[in-house]
Structures are given as C-alpha cells and as structure tokens.
Length: 146
Image (cartoon, rainbow, N blue to C red):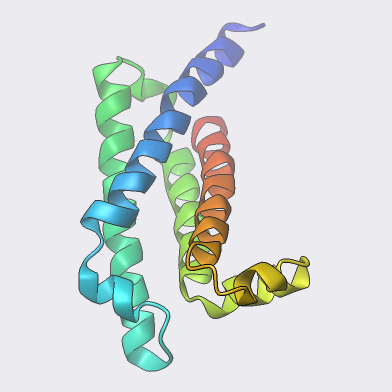
C-alpha cells in the first residue's frame, strides 16, 4: 500500500464510526420533537420540518467529523470537497427517506411492503435506520476519498 492509501484507510477508520455515532445523536437527541412529528407530513410545513432536521443533523455530523479527526491529528487527511460531498450525499439521502412516502415506496418496491403494512411499529423505523446507515457508509467513503 502507498502512504496515501494508508492515510485514506486510517481516515476511513476514524470517519465511518464517527458518522455512525453522529447519526445516532443527530437523529435522536438533536432533532426536535416538532421536526420529528412534522417532517413526513405533506406541504410546506413538512418540507421545512424535514429541512430543519437535516440541517441540524448535518451540523452534528460535521462537528463530530472535524472534532474527531482534529483530535486524532488526521484532519489534514480530509479535503473540503470530500467533507462537502460526503455531507451532501448524507443529507440528501436522509431528507428523501425522512419524508416517509419514499420509504414506503421503496419498501413496497423491494418486497418489504408487508412489513410496512404489518402494524409492527418498529418496521418503518428499522427500514429508515438501515437506509441511513447504508448511506453513511457511502458518505464516509466519499468523505475520505475525494
């Protein structure tokens, strides 16, 4: 491996779990009750609630990534472009699924409609979170490679 590849691997090893932790904090602790209740509703109020949630969520992710990489002395392994694109992909994917209708559409499209329709209160949450985590992995790769 080249020194650049080693640096990228080390940065990924720091950024991926940081994004995972920041996701949990931003999605559950930072998100307001108002945003949580309204982000999937129709109309302007729903869109604004979701945008507000995604903005505070991304701020949480940004602060966490910058703080952890600075504390580890590897902040210089990241680029502004990588961080921006990683956050953009994370934010867009988060917004889309948190609007709820796309989550239900994707669940039905992939054969998971029965789970959504089962009445299990955890079904939508589990699909939501697994979607977010998959995109966090992609975001972490983009953050450290661009």
